[in-house]
Image 1 (tube, helix red, strand yellow):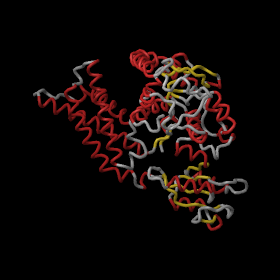
Image 2 (cartoon, one colour):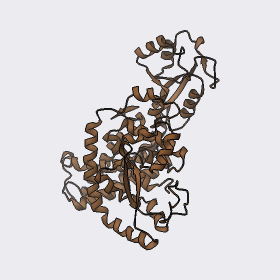
Image 3 (spheres, rainbow, N blue to C red):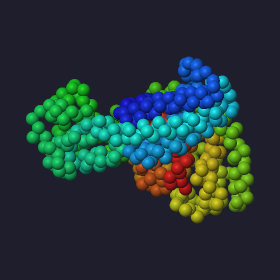
Image 4 (cartoon, rainbow, N blue to C red):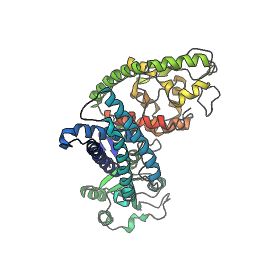
Length: 461
């Protein structure tokens, strides 16, 4: 994996993404040449339209990232990838047409967009037909050796068996016979030189999956392995990198303290984040005000009660603030106190069901972003009564309040809508990953991927 601004990207994804970008530039150039030949115009040097070509490619490429073209399933399923590519290219072409309408230029023609669309679909699908099996092969899977044969080693085996995973386990080493779960594990006593054994297998990473490390770590061997350039990782850090979440079952205070993350250097990042929040919220409020007013009127007509819903939520450092949304439930929905939302919740109104599905009810939260109570990206703000209960039941739950709550977030784009303690625990693992590894780059990825959640609203309630 490549670490980019504290966030890990698989080698196969990075290679495919860069190749796609180059192919999109090529498709844009071919479209220009076809159109120029049609009207009898001299083609001229490529450098003269370089900005337009790269800009066209970037817009379509960002649309591909936004709809999940580079997600784990897209790298393994050609059918899944094809559907996402078609949607992404269509959205990118629409965006380019709007840009050309607002900012017309001689370097870019709307008449070439149809050619660009067809050529982009052709080259990107051909690219995937040729590389699909190659990208999923062992050539892009890191060779990992696991020290341990217990429950943790079994969890790693289950993770390695997923088709979208980026590593392959080549050996398990049983450091003791206690609580042995992985039967094929090799006893440590049977290996004369662990460093030579790692070298012979071509291992690139060793993961410590021991239940109890005391007197079980072969420190001399691990030091020799490390000095040979093989990465040595602990179980919690390995899971965090591979799954994009903090594993609450194995994380402990000392790991959170000494592992990488929660950097003090985020002061500059926080300033950038706030500047973006102010600018984007002002623009979004201006553009969506007619939509908010329209649906506020529809909410009033659909059911009795106010158009807007106000509720106390827990914000940064546990401080309460008032959240504003378009009302999607009956006014008496929480007469007996706050409750988890349910599937086909009877408290939701007819208009409420629609505005929840397309996320229109979230638009008034932009006002909270402008005031500074929220950010566009961050953990979902919860009701104080829920927070009190969850802090007692789930470890490290209070740590999610070390960053501002957000309209969208890492948990929202990676985990379906949750309405239980178990769901809250699962989403907290993603929230902690975000709080631990926050950068403007991760915010940008989340904002792009939010489009995927809107287009395919999995579990929206």
